[in-house]
Image (cartoon, rainbow, N blue to C red):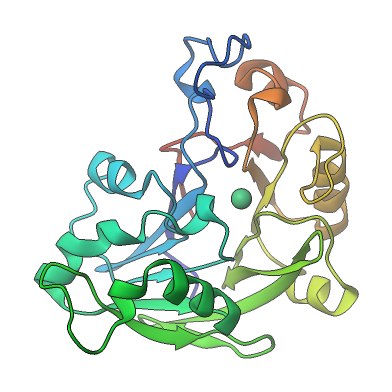
Length: 258
Ligand SMILES: [Zn+2]
């Protein structure tokens, strides 16, 4: 079932992206392409299916760079802007395909309805506005995307409940600070784990590098990739060298097969 899943890291940066506008930090000035990080998102592809997890402000650019010409749906982790602000740019897909399926917790849908009211309106719609098909994600309820089963994993982003997603042997968790035991058990046995590692210093709502490494050591996947990275984590090339053999920093446009 999990064979043939292709994961493309569309963005691996934290909320402001890397470089940060106007920053003179050496990592922001780096010439290494792996130090340039768009807002966090992944593309999941298998067969003819393409799904993205989150749809941040760099969504349009990410779809163009990776030539994603058809989109089957968007799985949202939570409502923060770095994960949702690009939703207006589903318009080309909507024009060609019709309503675009979105998968999200009801709190996230409520937030999207408030911020993008024209997308969700039933009456007096603006002719160019896109439209979505809402699929509510609930804790402990697996759901289907394409022909695959997805398990939502509820993790804590400080006090905000955020969903990570597991598809077969692949688990994607971002904006995590803690995971309750019963949710942690849903991750066990995963082959490839993606999890956030923000920076070296501790942070109130994201794992820092040390916490992310400790989490990987507990999950024991075959391979782990870190994402949602700030310039404050350091240069890609240097941090990568310091990691255990089965742990890597993700970088934009990296593709892995599971
Ligand atoms: Zn975020």
